[in-house]
Image 1 (cartoon, rainbow, N blue to C red):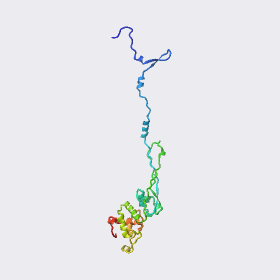
Image 2: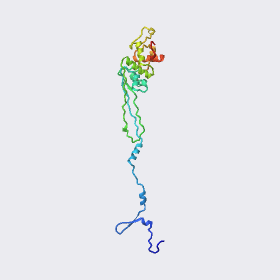
Image 3: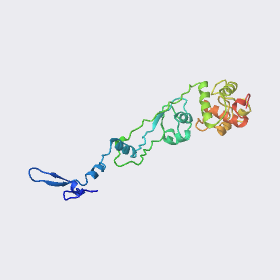
Image 4: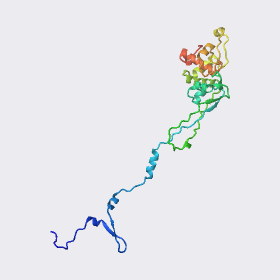
Length: 260
């Protein structure tokens, strides 16, 4: 029960508690405290941290710049053929593409290339640049130095002729082995690329057998392998044409064990 009497202490008003006296001397200023609690509870504004900035930067698209490459130059050496050069240099499109790119230098006959002739290997790469922000640094483009494959060279002898012929045959899908070619060459010409038969029926008919594998002119022309010389006395051209003919008639030069 509350006490009775006029000296009862009045309750403080909530509004009164929210004012404090402040000032100097005799003057006092009532300052409201309303909102202090809310101010303490309000979240502080935190600036973006370093890692968030880095993450944003990492998310931005980067400029992809394609490397620029220039054409390579190859100098023809003895024993070279367009097909062999195209294979060794990895020319896309083979000897036909190589000849097309160098037709003016080679001339009308792709099988006749002279030592010292300089051939251009590969077309000049076209620089392609992906879309990039306008602020991308253009100086980031770099030039890539094209790698030039080392040309395969063959000795100018029977071993070199057979090995080069085998490489040309592999490019054109013509079957045959070193042993089969060598065996037939030794029987037909004893390894002489200028051998000619002037006494058999072919000679009587005006088409003597010529070269390492004794091929007559009509057969040489019908089975000539593109990219090789058009001269039937040329060792590689003679071997590849003869093997192409043997593959068509006997399945492979390896299956030939006598005159064919």
